[in-house]
Amino acid sequence: MPQATPGQARVVDPILSAVARGYRSPKAAVASVLFPIVPVGLRAGRIISFGPDDFKLVNTARAPGANTKRIQFGYAGENYSLVDYRLEGAVPNELQEEASNGPGIDLSSNAVRRVQNTMALEREKQAADLARNEARYGAGNKETLSGTSQWSDPASDPFTDIMDGKESIRAKIGERPNVLTLGPKVLTALRTHPKVLDRLSTASDRPPATLQQLQALFELQQIVEGEAVYHDGSQFQDVWGKDAILAFTTPASMQEMGSPSFGYTYQLEGRPMVEEGYEERNANSWFYPVTDAYQPVLAGATAGFLIKNAVA
Image (cartoon, rainbow, N blue to C red; front, side, top):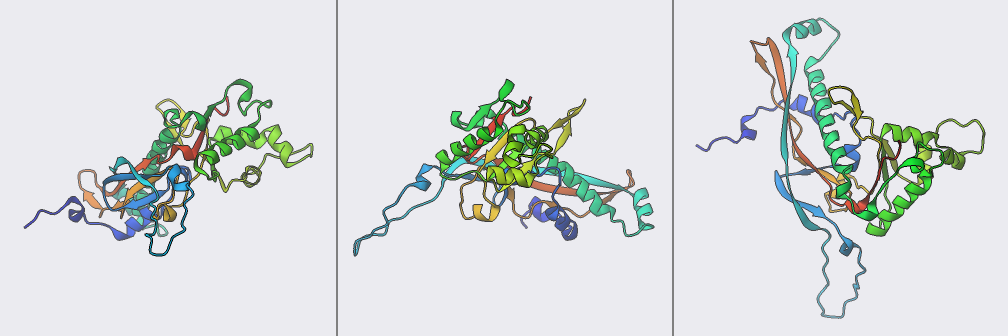
C-alpha cells in the first residue's frame, strides 16, 4: 500500500479553513495590492514575465490560403519555489471553560484569526523587502530624494515627482501605473504638502487632503497606506518605511489569464488551511495549526517606480 502524502495525512477543519481563507488583516494590506495572490497547483514552476514584445504591432493581414500568424503573450522567466509556513494558535482549556459560559465566544476562530494576523505581517514584510529593494529596479525606475527634494520640505514638489514616475512606467510598459503605496509618514507629508493643497483648493484654511482627493489629483485607481508595523526588539518600525512605490498591477483573475503585472504572490491551491485542532494534556490546551505555502515574486520591475526616502 503506498504511503500517504503529508497533505493526505492531515485532517482538515473545513469551517476554520474557511475562516482563514476569508480573513484579511486590516493593517497588512499592501502585499495583496502590489503582489496579488495567484493560486497555483504546483509548489515549483516558472514565473510568467512580460517584455516589450507583448506590445509590438502585428500585421494580421492574411492572403488566401496563407498560414495564420500566431502570437504568445509572456514568457517563462525565473524559477519560483513555494515556501511552506505553519503556525499554531493555542486555546487554554481554562479560557475555553470561561468562554463557554459567555455569549457565543468562539475561541478557536479567534485563535485562527490571531495566527492569520501574525502570518499576514510576515508576508507583508517579505513583500516590502522585495518592493523596496533598490537593486531590483533599473536606473529609470527609481529615485532617491534628499534635502529640500523630500516631501517633508515645503520647497519640494511631490506632484512633479509622482507624475514623472508615472511617465517612466508608461514609457517602459505602455501602461500607466494604477497604484501608489505610501509609508505612513509619507502619506502624512503628502496630505499636508502646500503644493498639493494648492492644487486642491485656494482657501486659506485647508484641511489635509483625503485619499480620494489624492487619487483624483494623481489620476490613480488606488492609493494605499502601508500601516503595518513590527517590533525590532527595541522599538516599532514601519514595514513600508519612508518610501513611495508606483506600480501597474492587475487583479488575480486577470493574472490567471496572463496579464502583465508588477508582481504576484504564487500560493498553493487550497491554502491557507487549518488542520483539525488537537488537545495537548501537558499544556492543558487545544492547538489549531494553520499552514500556508506561497512566494511573492517581482515579475516586472519596469512596471514599478520606487521613490526612496520620500520624507526625511
